Image (cartoon, rainbow, N blue to C red; front, side, top):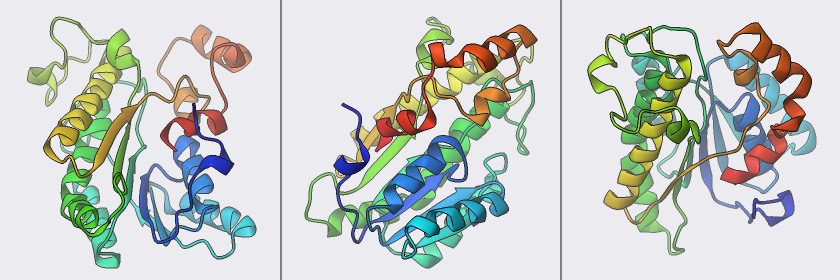
Length: 256
């Protein structure tokens, strides 16, 4: 059963990192966790002004919440390295890492390093961030006495199953020079398959950390509103989303 606000355990002493923390599922995750007394939440966002606005909003209800905005553009691996460095300079412990940010059904394009944009943003950037923070996460796991005290949560999607070729899986030869003729759904799906495989391998390699990939359901967020789909799909989404999607407050429960 998905967590309700009152079932989230006390977060005293916990240090938490959330990507995409300024909007959608990430913002709701930050808001919910901030209500339970964490030691620190690092709110990673592409646009710092939006992160700062969310912090102001949260502090109206939780004035003592320790929230730190971190500039993180997942389109750039250099930005990922910079964000990780800022976090590691500020703390020697991380208890929870939410790999939440991403892009969905985007127009054809590449990241600053030339990778297909869905794969680069949704998977590669998060994989690098995890790698850079992993020594800290492992050290936290060794220091904690409670099993499951350290967690990595990767937001995936059933698109990994529904829109990825069952025969070929991830199209590795074309990740650097993507075949832009492939559908946005397929490009998105393989990035989410990568999230699942990444989380599964982390769980195998580092059993002291609870690592999971989750599907939040079909959620009404800004990412969906910007999807590169025909106008009729946008019209159906704008007018009838409530028939097949949930509000962000409900979708965020899956990862809490």
